[in-house]
Structures are given as structure tokens and as C-alpha cells.
Length: 428
Ligand code: AMP
Ligand code: GLY
Image (cartoon, rainbow, N blue to C red; front, side):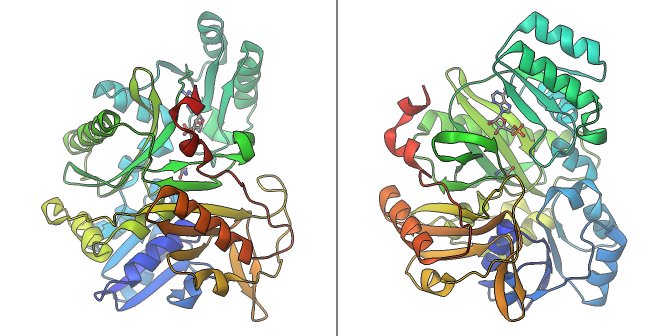
């Protein structure tokens, strides 16, 4: 089969790597790809992944049998719709399904209609109403820009002043059109847990749970980032919580079949908070998580081409998921300054030595080849994933591998997974 993956991050490297392991994968393209995917697939630099017509033309010209859409932007832009209309199997929902991620209001209304557990909220495009809701409910309270804001449109306000300021900023255009409607919601507490599911024809096949680390610095301090590390499965989740999350994902999948115009075919990502009153949804995303994918897919023993094709063709009963009985931990190596301004073009060494360790895989997130050398080209540069028989051993191996890799300004958290080792009480 000829397969095209859209995207350029660590998530797409992990997806492409898993697809490439399948004997069914003959020719693999990644558009635009990165320094890591260049090693085993053909990077397609000139293709705009958000331009449906351009992706369709490429797919037809290269006889592509399956298109896998990694990031949210092409999904929200309707790239899947264009491809599906021409009969090309696509892994990723159409634009309507992607609204679950593209609009927080759309998502909250979906959750309400289907009685899915989530925080109480107000969605409004009337600034005065947002301020009045904050006055009524008090702090702590959460303010979110409605649309896509690359993870930056959320303020968890500890005081009413902070919340009012966030609302003012949103309506002043800090997030462009994405902030012309805001969602103000109840502040939930507890550990976060990501539950990703393959969804097709109204059925959900949950993957192993995982946990991201969104803050930039140790101790969950500093600004929010795209994610600084992750692990899977999650030792602090109880069987009861796991069952409840799976139930919520199944309910949501059934709801997509019931009310959407076209079948939702792709990943549905439930971002949960494990509150004292049970797991509640913070959000849905319409794609794999980044960096969660880098700890979930390495544990998948099943053939990912079979799974994705079954999803894309609406054959959920053919989905079989087998997981390695191992723990996985990934640590993000970032550029100095990330998530704020950072320099690019720093020469990277030591990846081969790290990759040569048993049970270690280095996924590239922001790398490029320049004059025959691998250099940094993004804020999150590499995801160093290790697997182990125990959580502790996977974690130690990941940090050992991180130590072998060097580039000027290398920055990483040193406490990925530490709270899970300390136990549930470390979230109290
Ligand atoms: P989101 O983009 O909706 O996932 O929000 C980004 C981050 O903000 C989440 O990962 C949480 O850490 C935090 N967050 C979002 N909503 C809430 C909430 N209702 N209560 C507490 N924290 C939240
Ligand atoms: N790791 C968070 C996300 O992918 O949205």
C-alpha cells in the first residue's frame, strides 16, 4: 500500500514509524515530515497539508491507498471531506467531527446533549455576560477562547481579577476570531488523564491511558506548553476510573454516529480530569495527542495499517488492539527558551547512541537536515521514549538516553512521571 501521513511533529514520526513496521506498507510519504521521518519515508516538502485540493491531487498522482491526518488544522479545514468525496480512505474525521476540537462551544454542547460528564460552563460572545458569570461564580474559574489557539487560549484563573483580565484579553482580539466567543467554566481538580480511542461507525476502541505534562518546568511550574513528557499506562488510575472513561468514550462514539452527517473515522481524544466526583471531560480533540502518541503507539503490537484502514473504511469490527505488557515514558528535549522565543539551527549529536539502546526510540519533533547535519528547527526538538518492565525502569532508561543527546540550549524536565511515583496524594 501507498500511505500518506500529514504533519511534521513527534506524533507524526511515531505514527509513520508504526505504519512503516507493517509488511503492508510499501511506499510511505510524510508531508511535510521532519529530520526523523526523512530516514525511512519520503518527506514531501512542498505540499500544503491544509489545502484539500492540493492533498487530493498528490494522493491521486501517487496512487495513495490511505491518508492519515496527524494535526487538527487540516481536519478543521476539511481536508478529510475532500479526500473522502473522491473515495480515498482517510484516517481522521471530517470538518464537522473535527469541530469537537475546533470549537469549545460545539464540544460542550455535544457533551451536554449526550449527558457526558464535564465542568459547568457558560459560552457567550457577550463580554458583559462573561464578566457577570465570573462575578456570580467566583474564583478559581477557567476562561477559554472558543476556537483553536494552539493550546494557549486557556487561563486557569486563581482570582476573579485574573479571570476578568482573561475575558477582556480574549475580546480584545488576543486570539483573533478564536476568541470572539469564550467559554467560562468551573475549575476542576485532580490528575489529568488522556484517553485516546479509535472511533469508526459509532464504536470506540480505547487505547491505553496516558498522561501528559503540560507545564514547562519541574514541579508543574511555568507556562503551558504543547507537552513536555508523557507516560503510559497511568499507574494512579483506578480500575473504576478506567471503566468510567471507557464508558464515556463509547457513549461519545455512539453519539457521533447518531448526530453527525458523516461517520466519524479517526481518533477521538478524551482529555479527562480525575476529580473526586469521578472522571470529567476537559475537552475532546479530534486526533492523536502529542506527546501521548509517542508512549501509546510503541506499546501497540497490532499492525497499525490494519487498524487505521479498518477505521478509515468503517469496519470497526475488524479492529484488534494488542498491547505490549510494558511501561513507556517519553521525555521532550526542547530548545532553550521554549515555549517563549528560542533559536533554531543548533547541531544535534548523540541520537544514534540513544537509539542504539534496547527499548529506546527517539522521535523527532522539531529537527531538519541542513548541509548534511541534523539541526534543531522547533521548540520541541526530540521525544525520547523508553519502554521497561516497570514504570521506574522505563523512566530511568528514558533519562539515560536523554543524557546521550546534545545540542546547545537543550532543555528538559527532570521530573516526568515523578508525581505518579509519589502516588495519588501528590495531586491533593
Ligand atoms: P484544554 O485546552 O481545554 O485541554 O485546557 C488546557 C489545560 O488547562 C488542561 O490540560 C488543564 O490543565 C487546564 N484546564 C482546562 N479546563 C480546566 C478546568 N475546567 N479546570 C481545571 N483545569 C482546566
Ligand atoms: N498533549 C496534548 C494534546 O495533544 O492536545
